[in-house]
Length: 531
Image (cartoon, rainbow, N blue to C red; front, side, top):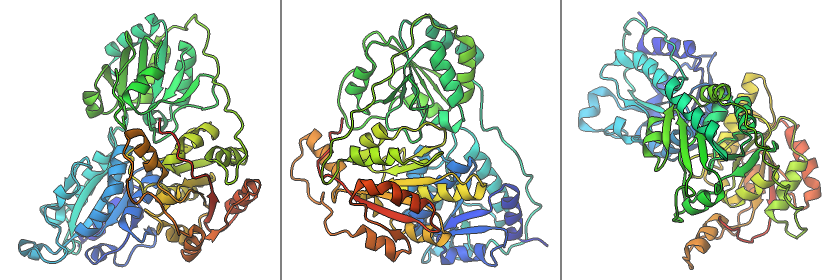
């Protein structure tokens, strides 16, 4: 008779969940014993790293990923990056071991008290099966829940003595819809508003990239002769950034954002919240006289928007429909935004100089994964993303996502056979939130360059301190970190790039290597302006 474990592994195969990200613990060993040869176990040294590797892998493959955590402590370790997966709307199947059922009443060591509640509210569904035989069906429900819009992580707590129990008949493998079309009547209303608008503007979010809808976005923008902004703090690139209609990323504060949209009477937001704000800079949500139209696949996102009329639906399907419904505008297209001035020479170089050099040597079809908050404006100003699915970062604002996510993306590129080059840009502060991820990248033999702008400080926090007038905050400097030595200790190559003329050569060598290469680049310690 088949066991619960046999049936669960067969279901995972049928669902394509044969890559497991985790750090094995005692409560997971009954599930992992005699690990099948057709499965791949991606070994992380810490659970937060495992979660973000899976997040990057899922986003790059376009399919859910499976993360296996160690009961309550391991789930707790992974929570920060689970929050990011929630905000990224990444479909993750998160399983965690639980103590033996026969001991749960007395709460033994490593029991997870109220396990299904531990991860809330940052999962779509969490559950500890009542019977061992319910595990396969719970996995099927978890998969269906994670993938349906809005996608996101789910969680199952699985007692360690369940796996050898006799199984019920296996659950039916089901398919579910991952996109839904907007209401046609309300869509026509939106189209009529846009057609009558004097000066419409488009604001696009990550859902446009997830829906593979860049062509539809370009088509609608050109039909409306409208400028296009990325919504504040986007976790993915949303539009070809070399297109003459593209204006950049909106500021993520209330007053400055409204100022950026001044002069527009209609603002169409598709696939993004309205809006991500931080810090608090008061002002009007919109310019005087402007109307906002909001298209999202997330009812919660629609409900919490402070302004605007909403329409529920898939970003790509909505863009396609609006492109057909809206007549061509008779106004001239917007003028292209000016190119930034060449960066000034300095020693050490400013972030703009570093990223201008990186852009000059950017690999064809490259994918950027970044977590360098203080340098983000300079990076986005100098390195323009021109292809879909080519930019990933965290939607949550929490650090520790970028490095392991880059490893997940690079692994996905190898596993899918696309083999697009992946480059990570990780600040020297951010790097140490998940630095142990380097070991996994080295073990996997991934040719991943990790460019580390080194300013020996939490410059983003100094920028916040300047904005909010909070002098004297302690612990904002990071002296004495030898990034290259740490990287070599984890099995990576490392080259300090103290001359930007050598960056191209170092980048090319890293992309051709058989392991990750960390490239620390000393940069100016000047504190950037936040807004």
